Every structure is written in C-alpha cells, then in structure tokens.
Length: 459
Image (tube, rainbow, N blue to C red):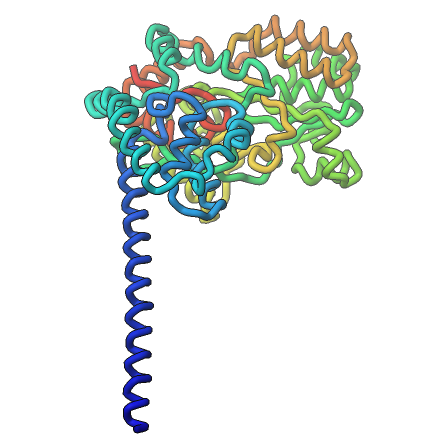
C-alpha cells in the first residue's frame, strides 16, 4: 500500500514539474517573440534613428508614439531609457515638456500587442519605407555626411563660405539652446574604424571672475578667448588696465596686471575664495557666461593658428609633431582624447584648451543649466549684441560697457585666422576629404548635438 502512495506522489511531482516547465517555455517564447519584434523594428530604423530623423519622424509626437509602440516592456524605467535614446537624436526644443504632456495618452499598457503589431506594420509600410528610401540611397551613393535640416543643407551648399552660415539663427537667443547630458549615438558613416567620442568632462581650471559684479566666465581657446580674458581683467581694475595697456587689443595674457588675481582658477577655488564656499549661491546668484563656437570653425581656426603657421614656439607639442599635416593631427588628436578620457594619459593643457570638445570643458555636463552660452559662430553684430546684453544684465557700469563695445567692434586681433588665405586652404582640405571630415565630426560630435550646430557636409 505504501508503495502505491509513493508511486502516486512521484507522479504528482512529475506532473507539477511538467506544467511549470511548460509555462516557463511559453514565457520564454513570448520573450523571444517580443525581443524579435523590437530587434526587427530597431534594425529597420537603425540607419535612420540617429541622423536626419526628421525624414522618418515629422514631429515630436510621432517620435514619442513610435517609442511607445515599439517598446513592449512594462518597466517604466525602460520606457524612459528608450525614449531618451531616440528623443535626444532629434534636434527639437522642449522635448521633455512635450513628452510629459502626452505620456499618459501613449502608455504601453494602454496599447494591446495586436494594436502594436498593426501600428508597427502600418508605420513600416508607409512612413519608414517611403521616407527612408531616398535618404538611404543618398548615403549609399555619395557617402556624404548630411545635416539634419534640409533648408540648412541647401543654404550651406549654395554658400561658398560654408561655415559662415552655421547656426546663426539656431542659437540667436541664449535660452533656446537645448542641453543634452546623455551620450548620443553616432551618425551613419562608411568609416567603421572610428566612432563618435562620447560625452566626458575634464577638470575646469580656466575660470575668470569679477566678484564685485558677480560675473564669471570660463574661457575656451579660439572662442573669443583673448578678448574675454582681457575684458575680465579690465573690469577688475579699469584705471590700472588703461594706464598700462590703453586698449584691450594691447593686452598680453601673461603680463596682465590681474593675472592670477581674477583667473585662471579651478571652479572649486573660485567658489572658495570669491563666494565663501557657498556653491549653491555661486551658481544660482552669479552671472555665468561661456562663449561657444561651431566645432569645425573652431578646429580650423586653432589648427591654422597653431599648426600651419610656423611662429608658434609650442608647435611641436601642440600639434603632436604633425606640423601642418591635418590627417596626422586629427588621427593623433582622436587617440589622445580617448586616452585622456579613459585616464590612460595626462592631458596637455594647451591641446585641451584649443582642440578638445567644448562639452568636455567649463563644467558643461554638471552645470550647463546655470550658464548662458553665447554663440560666436554667427555674424559679428549678433554676437556683439548678445555679449553687450549679458554685461548690461550684470549691472556693469555703462561707461565700462561703452568702452568695451567700442574696443571690440573696431579692433581685430593680430592672430585671428578668419578670412585669411591659409585658413581657406585648410578649410578646402577638410571639406574635400570625406575621411578627414568624418573624423573631425566624430571628435566633436557631442558639441554639434549639445549646442544644436548642424553637422557639416562635404563639398
């Protein structure tokens, strides 16, 4: 009798195990099917998702809809992650605000699997297939890096001086800059040996302050840097500066009467010595400005000034012993940045200041929400007007502002390369070589994304 009971118990255990295993198998198949669905859709969109997204996604609402219909997981954090991965590749304003407004309408839980499949099938057959074909063909046949705005592309192609048209209207107002602290995936490229350099941050040791006006800047090489440091020196002690130099353009950085008095300093030291260690008050109460520039425009200016011209006594170190060889320089700069980023090499301060991505400098990642960014890659009038407006908002005396405005509008520094023959030669070299333009764009990709500069196109 006991043997019979034992036999039945064993059968029940086996039966229970089979039911449980069957359930797990079904669950696994569901997960595989869901994963296949996501991968299939991702593969169909992969070539379009991170570049020229307006071709596939006509507006922000279609992007969010696509995100939620593609995503079949139930975890909110995954929804957020997938949303950000797509949304930050679309150059549009106020995306997060719009996302929050329509989030409830497009929750994944409100859409059945059947409806998701129907939507995906419809989008794939209509929107993606029709819109992407011409884009993919142009990528395949020309291998040219495209901008994400067709009107900008047309304007740039028709203009002999490509860089002069970049983003003058995109960042006309400072508060319109879209900040993106996530790592944005790279654009499509036929050069597979390199990839876009991700966001990273270096120690900020290039701060200048005028504490009596609670005015602060971080200087970036080739971004009006010679003038901005001179102006801050002048504002610190106007009479002494005028007595020694007379004019702003006569100021020499190493012999400023205020050198090491109001900069350059580490951010933590500025807060410690000029704001009683109160970091919150420093960022919230002071006026912070950083001048930014189109990455390619900045690179050409620095490369021409430091590497092509032979007067630079630091030329060998600044240019990785490449002199005026742009291919040699860009390849070594790319490797150098990766090593420094991964903490395998100490940074060269001059190379960092002149050639590193602007997003790696000036506390961009942590503090960009407190900083006013003024676009240097625009017309002089727009830039000067923006800069003067910031000073007026900082309670700087009118007579000081009048002097500064007169000086910067009437003077051109000797080392400027804009419009020179040497600069035009370097620009032609870069834009006529797809490999070099691709590599430069990958080095500075996060700058393009962070500050809404359109990607460059080859001639």
